[in-house]
Image: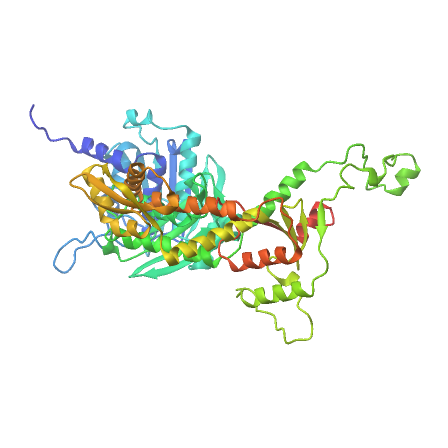
Length: 632
């Protein structure tokens, strides 16, 4: 079979399949160009899921009449330039685009019209490309002083086979919205607007550059709940900076769709980064729950390769272990700094549940509140025949009210408080004559135990309900982890060392982490190509399947770069032991015990959630309680 040179039109269409996968990817490329052009405002319109019409308008530097025909040539770009030696450096990429493929790729499969006025120019010009056929540059009307308007019609009309693989208009519209959200989250200083089929979808004003402006943009995109439950991240290690915001463990989701990762301002989907995020939260969430986060990695462009894929959605780090360690360490440090804090959505969920289940007692007929006593006199309301004391459950003992604060209990709480450093309030001055009021503690003063399971505490502006078993389970778990870290993991020697057969590449990865595994109680050594010999296992695991454990570790190393399987098993055992060794539901606690538990929660990191990511307490503000009773 003879070798043939493909015609340019066919080459362009083949290349377009890599760059323009769907309407969302076409819009991403056009918005990237607008960002590189220095735009402060970007407007996007889409019709028919982006297949019928796309419009991207910006107020960037624009294009001159001479630049328009060059812009639609393949591999023609303004974002790369030769150095003094005439070399083109692909390692120092400071722009979103650099390949020079987007406009010619779109023009080869659709009807593309570019209208632009260059900054400082008087006239505007346009050019039309239809299925790869290029028209002439012509004068055009342009509404702004400078910028560009790019209109794409009938996307993929020149490649009908591609249209068969498109999803529904709704699915494509959702993909467009998600793409614009990601780009907007990476560029808070640029205003974005998105209209789909004439409906306003997004209106995001430009924010001030910096953490506060970024958080405001994230709140507009992800919702106010994220803003209220986000922890700021800002750590630097060896020239790599990690910034952004991560949600509290109790503010979690059922999938990983709310995890946004950016490298040098570029939205990316990277298994290394998502694996690091999972590892950082592994100790706080159940396996089927996922954290929310928007993380920004900034590093020297020479330390990351963005020229991995035509869509530029994947990157490759020169030192992936450094980046991964920074993410895990920074997130865990920030989560530890959050202390006992739980998400505000816990209280909202509790209030919504109460409102949904509110119903009058059996046989109780409420009176019309607007009419009041006059309605009763006119015979419009009949008082209940059942006496209040006869209402079911009212005479049962359901709570124990503790005596007023003082005496021995005061000394216990006083000593606990002096050993705790709170970020948002100074320790009280005990030299003053006025006694300290325990309701000023973050978790308040214990007032009662309900159903021998829940502690009710009063705070200065509300109340706190604590699940005593879940709270103490987390406290015991954190104590066990500290002891294990201080004294190391006890090992048990196998009577007969076990040989585990693996793929040679897997065995090499596992053996390379032998020192790390030994610190966790698993002692291994190489046993020829493709085999690992297990000599000792962690004593905490008891009798365990060493072969299955090694294979799980090999899978984790291949996917996440860390032996999560062993750590998770050890933590699971500690969690189980903490569960059995903690205060059980149904145990009566006296006032000193309840207050001691609250004080220890305030002093222990991560005590706002149990070992499975569920909240250990619910805080209800007085304003929320008043709303339940219609007082405001």
